[in-house]
Every structure is written in C-alpha cells, then in structure tokens.
Image 1 (tube, protein in one colour):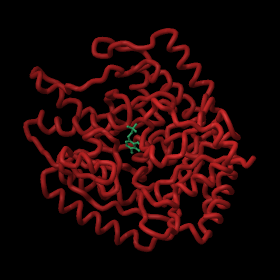
Image 2 (spheres, helix red, strand yellow):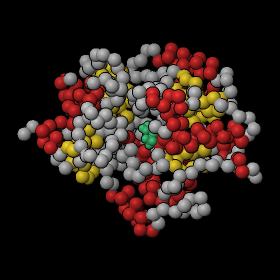
Image 3 (cartoon, rainbow, N blue to C red):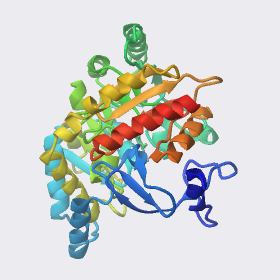
Image 4 (cartoon, rainbow, N blue to C red):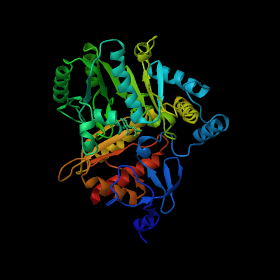
Length: 432
Ligand code: PMP
C-alpha cells in the first residue's frame, strides 16, 4: 500500500461537522488526529506529521506541552470560570501585569480570539474620539490585510472572496498599499514612497485610527515590510493625531523574532490585538492592550463613556493560566524565538535557488516564498493544494496560501525536523 493510500484510510467526512474555510464539494476528507507531541501530529492512520504551520499559527511551544497541560489542569481544579465584571482572579492579574510590562501598554481588555481582539481595538478607537467630544470616523487599513472574520474585522481586511457576500454590511475604510518586500528587492524604496504618498493623502481626512499587521501580513500572503516603512507610517499617523492599532494576533509572542513585531520594528502602537500564541496556542483567548491615555477617556461619571463590551468567557482562568505558563516558557528561553531566523536562513537560501521559487522572505520564525506559477496568482491557485498534498505524503503538513508557501513551525521543532520540512518541500517543488 502506498503511503498516500494508508493515510487516506484514516480520513473521514463527518455528517455533523462543518469545517472552516472548506468547500465540501471538493475538499479532501479530514484526517483524524489522536494526539500531538512537540512538532508532531499523531494521526489515527499514517505516519506522524510535522506540523510546519503550528496549526494555523497558534501552537507556540509544541503540541501537548506538559508545562501548559499541567498549568491548565491545576487551574481547572481550582477555578475554571468566573464572571469578570464583578470579580477578578490572580491568573488574570498576573497576566495583565506581565503583558503590560512586555508590550508597554498598561491596560488589558480580554476577549475570545483574534477577531474579537481586533473588534475591541476598533471599538475602543472609535469611542475614544466620541468620548472626547471630537468624533472621527475614518479608519485606515492596508491592501492585503486580514484581521479576522467578524464584521468589523472583515471591514478592515482586504475585500475579497471571503467578504464578498457581506460587502453591503461592511463600513468603508481608506486603503493604503502595503509595500511587500523580499530578499534582493530593488523596488522596495519606490513601493514604500508610493504607499506613504497615499497614506499622507488619506490622512488629510480626520482619521480615528490606522490599523496594520506589523512586519508581516499573514493571511494576506506572508507579505513582509521593512521596519523603516512602519516607522514612517507611525510618524505620519502621529502627525495626523490618529491612533495606531497593531494587529499582533499572528506576529506577537516571538513569531517575528522579538516579543512583538512592533518592538522589533521600533514602533509604539496605542492599541494592540493579541491572540494565537497568547496561550501558547492551547486555548482560545484574545486580548486588546491599550495605553493609559486611551483608557482614561473611558473613565468618568457619564455612563456613555463606558466601553459597553464584554464576553461570557472574559478572562477565562484556564486561558489565563495557560498564557502565564506560556510566558514562563518564553522568558526562560527567549533564544528559542530570537535565534529562529538563523535556523531558517541557510535552508531558505538553498531553496531560493530553485527555479520554482521567487520572492524568498524571512522574519523570525516565519519563512516564505512565492511559487513561480502559471495562471492567476491568488488564494485559489491550484499549485498550493498540490504542493500541500505532496508534502503531506512525505510527512509534512503545510497549508500554502494560493501560490504563497511558508513554514511557520512551533519553537520546539528539532533541527532534524526543520531540515526534513525543507527537503520535503524541495522534493515537492521538483514534482510540481
Ligand atoms: N488578525 C490576524 C493578523 C490573523 O492572522 C488572524 C487569524 N489568522 C486574526 C486576526 C483572526 O484571529 P481568529 O482566527 O482567532 O479570530
């Protein structure tokens, strides 16, 4: 039996499940995963798979990490949940102090995932202007951005196939080009100048906030920009008096080689959305960090000043315990994320010479490139699924974004496993 046939035996199409981002008429069956072990996913059938994309960019320290598992179990035995409007608890307080210290924004507002963390940031930004009696309506976002799938997050994201059915429900947003760059990109400065010109023009309209994914647009195609560009954006945003929102849902917690991509880029946002790696990737949780200056505008006798927003599971103690344990692991070994770029580099340099590879790029734990493809480039390009299948047959789980291929592994991946990812990728490229 071929490896592919063996793997297919363990695949299922469940009659009661509706999977995300999946067209059931054409999708391959799902494979049942029974456990995880570091960078590996253990399937019911077939060999272990290297999870080279950290299960949608969340798994930071590896699957079934004993430290995180114990922190969650201990917390579950003490206090699993409590309404956060009237009570507080130690894991939430500890997390707030630690995150404030790390990102330099004093106030932490809890929600449930990346989309809600962005929604909250947008609501805070808009209400901040209203509370101060100077309402501003314009939001500025970048071409190619992805900020989540709830309505506000969709509105600020690039309008595409995903958002098309809801177009009439999405608020208008001013758009600025995202000057994506890669190794040996001669045109980067011209792209940045053109983008800044557009930014300056749109900022002539009073603007509530500018939202961006610092250093790296994830779902938009692992599209990287230079820190210099972000610093220019920050300067112009400040000159216009607008708030700067950093969506660090993907880029936070070491993903871009520093604690936060903003920090690596040298920018200081007013609001920051965090999720994914927040809990080490084991429990769903989002937070929106805000500066004290932002927070202060919500404090006063008038009930209208209040941020009337909350979720049932606000500050869930299990999520907070996982997040604190994850921070312990990161603090104990920051080299794991600070030095990841060096681990990728020699592999990516070799792969970059392949005739099917263009626009290689790297930041922190994230390495990517574009396939040289026929037909239109974009999310639906068939080269991506083909490459995914070839890699899967050889024990590596990838999920290209159309023609964009990337590796975004958990920090715990061994050198041998990382080497395997690249060699499988190279072999798959030969077969494409
Ligand atoms: N912002 C960014 C930058 C993201 O990458 C994502 C998810 N991929 C989100 C927001 C939305 O997060 P979630 O899927 O947890 O709602």
